[in-house]
Image (tube, rainbow, N blue to C red; front, side, top):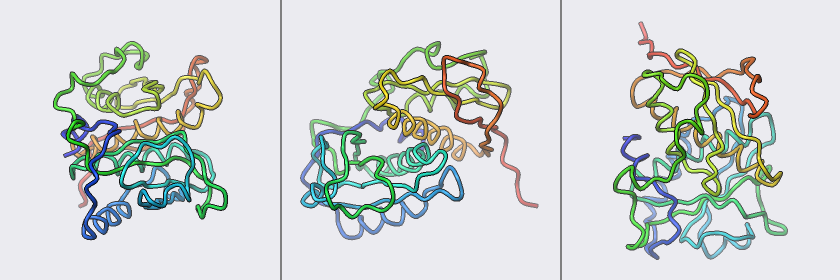
Length: 253
């Protein structure tokens, strides 16, 4: 279940040398094919890469792991947010399977690397080392108080659990840049303006990661979400991305 996986997930930085079986690799490949994009026409690529070949593809300060998934995408509006949205669905699936992962935001393509479209980020993955197990309780999260990530009327009983699970999503340097504005059955999603321009890409990916938590919670609880662009750019302090309208799933007649 998503709620259980979200509560135990953590960014794993120390891995066991245990290798994946061929059956597990095939299962991961199938899971990638089942990921839901934020946009129907989005093109996002997942390239599975073992540790002994990663340096031929991505250079930089990567967490040492047995395996990596390199994410690239075709540039279009919201493509980085879509990368985060799809990648986090995989991260949650991996956690359910007992597999750890960590976003590596400091990498860049190696010279002559065969990468489709535009490189975005790398995901390290493998079985966690014994000293780095998954979380056992929500008290182990370090997250900002509600007034720092929720604007407007935060007292919305219907939307509170959606925002709660979005708050548990990982973010680069734990900056937690995503801001939510509850509005009836809708959530307007913003992000804070980055202090450094080089953080712009990561904060856009972080936004998609947080949206994945809302989407997965809604799917688990039987709700449907409409994503749309609204006229909500009224907060000069934040950058508006989109609005989520959450409703009960309508059964097919």
